[in-house]
Length: 105
Image 1: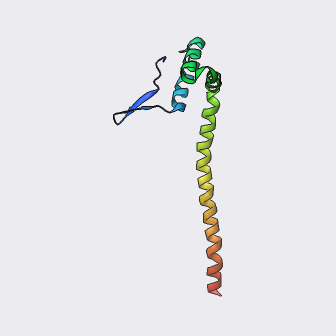
Image 2: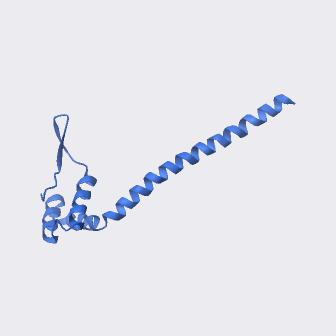
């Protein structure tokens, strides 16, 4: 299949590769011009069948949107974790201060 493997070996066991990895490789080769439109059509029909080939083609043509979304998700997870830590620290400060103030009185 145009030099892109759908399987890989882990610990001596042959496993299917992640679909996102396969589609990412196809998108990269297609965008680089290493795969013609005709070859891509044949490959996509082999992967998804006649009914799903158009969907796979749309995904590959817009693969950059998927990559951008995944990057934004990863960046968002980091900022969400930082915000959660900051909020937890503020909440902890507010809950400890009244007790400390009550004991001082």
